[in-house]
Amino acid sequence: MDASEAVLDDTVLNLSGEGADEKELDASSPFFVSKKAAAVLKHAILDSYVVPFASKVGRYAPDGRVVYLDSYAGPGRYEDGTPGSPALILDSAARIAGFRQLDCYFIERGRRSYRSLAALVEDARSQGLAAHALQGRAEKHLDQVLQRAAGSPLFAFLDPFGLGLSFQALTQQIFGSRSAHGTTGRHATEVLLNFNANAVRRIGGLLTSPKDTPGKPATLRAMDAACGGSWWREEFEASKNNTEAVARITTGFAQRVARTVRAGYWTIDVRNRAHHQVAYHLVHFSRHKDGLWLFGEAASLAQVAWRRACLPPPDEGTLFGAVDTFDEEEEQRAQAWVRQISQNIERLQRDLGPFTIGDRQAEVLAGVLGQARSKHIRAAVKQLHKDGKTDCSGVGDVRRLRITPPR
Image 1 (cartoon, rainbow, N blue to C red):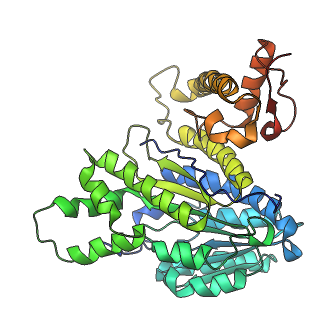
Image 2 (cartoon, helix red, strand yellow):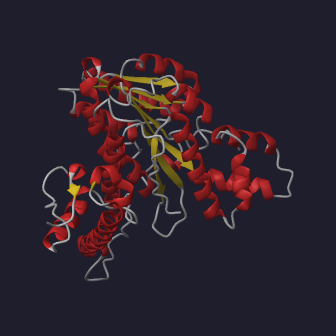
Image 3 (cartoon, rainbow, N blue to C red):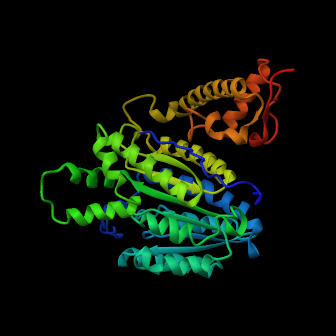
């Protein structure tokens, strides 16, 4: 990353498919028994993104130190032994320990979950990793962690079961405590958060409900605090259904944060099954276009893992199951993405003239944003070159490919 590059003030990368202070789940919750498909998606994103992020920005940081914050960490592992986000990140820290120090801070409120988390962290520390387990609310420890992160790049993962940190804490404490002028290196600041669609639906329903629900005013005020104002109420009431309300409010939230902290953003809808309603959106904020590009690559790879996790169990009564056709279906998806990208590139070349792929990520991937990635862009460019529609051969770093008309 080059610190001289401009901040992405108005970058919008939107991959949406469409009580306030909730009690924290403890390790005894059924949620922690086994990993659902929705968790597969967010964990695959973390697994694909944190290492490239730390590797890239850590080059400019003192001693290669990069700070990772998980403010709603949970027990670290599921009851069946499957890694949760803390275990995955500690594995990542171990993989890059030879050239980067990933300094990990895990905050967990629940006592039982914290005990499990603390044991996981203690084991990591015995292996020489920089890891810390903190018990209590995220707000209690946030300033302390941010002080420790001063002078180093920061990646914050905010994954609550309810509303989580307020808009003010996100924009002023996390982003506001760090330089907006240095978008890379030791000033790099990125956040991946869970914007809970179920909470939007549930709390929004209070606006139209005639019932005098206990705690209703406090719940609505908490939603105001999470969204950065009461604007969301008008959006909810103006929507024709819950699906539209969730999409409008998620986009409105992401745009307000991005404008306030001078960042670009992604939103990714997360479901437990393809036909289910959105459970939550993962919203990613970055102040540098390289971060947005790398996150897009991670999101695409994570979608593959999610689709595989959504496969039904093998049916012993049939000769062929869903697993047998998965690779074929993935190839069909890839071919459709390449066709869409080819059309996008042709249109951009016609409208703009010569352009560089990395400067037009959202437009190049329009219609397949978050699904397709570099390999599909390269395939599209090569096909266009073969068809005599561009002079660009598709060889080299995809982000730097210059699309020019044929000679």
